[in-house]
Image (cartoon, helix red, strand yellow):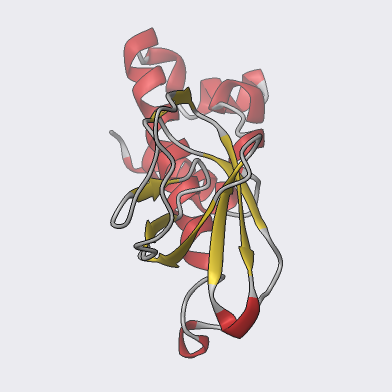
Length: 155
C-alpha cells in the first residue's frame, strides 16, 4: 500500500473509534468519490476492499471496548455504572459457571456464578444486558429469560 493510502486508512481507523460499532459505515460510504479515487482505493478488488472494511470495523470495535471501562476495577478508569446493552457474538447454548460471553461491542465477560445455570436454550446472537448490582458486582441477563449470572469483565 502506498504511503498516502496508508495515511488515509489510518486516519479513518482513528475516526472509526469515535463512532458506534453498530453504525459502522464502509470507506465507500465515508468518502466522496473524489477522495476515494485520490486515495487509490478504486484499484482494490472487491475482496480487498471488503477485507479493508472488515479490518476497520474490527479495529473500531476493539478501540471502543478498550475505551469503555465498565466492569473493570476502578483503577482501570473512571467508575461508570451505566448498564451495558449489546448482543452476544454467535450462538448461546445456555450458560453455567465459567461461560465466556463475547459481546458485539467488543467486551468479554465471564460467569463467576456457580449457582447461575441456563440450560436447554440455543439462541443466535441474543440481546443481553450487563448491569451493576449490589456490592459492586455485575450481572448478565439474556433478553427474554428471568435468569442472570454474576459476571466479571475479562476484556
